[in-house]
Image (cartoon, rainbow over all chains, first blue to last red):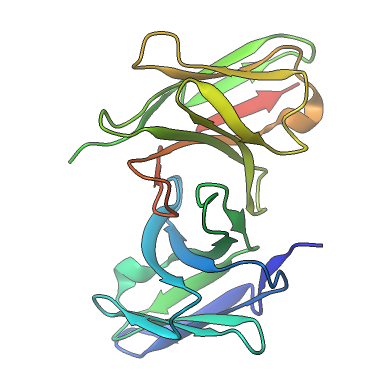
Length: 113
Length: 113
């Protein structure tokens, strides 16, 4: 069946360090992947996406890596800041039905000052 | 910056009662969604809505659930007869295109007693 998951429920990093949040997916038919950030008491917020024809995509301070061979997705946050503290979800979907997102369990990122 | 607004922020209801959760999506969005998140768990897709009709729904979205966009502005989720397990945070989301970049509201917390 379909499942999207994250390897670690909680990640604690020092302010200024780089963070790496991992995600594994099992549905080979998925061809579009998205990272969302959810701050306490708020709805998920889009961070960055990547399609299966790419293996890396960079945004502002964030990079998403996709390894289709092992069905692995990661989010790298450079120079982590206190405002990055949140729960991070990976989500997968398929072209043509991209609003139906299948979310993973989430990783809580804690940034220590 | 335009945002998705949801009301009520929190509703407490008795089991068996009808509940209507309301959302005002961003005005230029065409695709609308409801997701839910049981406390501490991942975000789950409920239903997608486009061109005034349901385009897809999940197994969770059974006959007790319905959606409506009555006036071209509001987007509502109705639960006809609530159950204890309907207690969750319900998120409305929208998108301008059929992409994975969804804009979520802050959610409506439903507590069924």
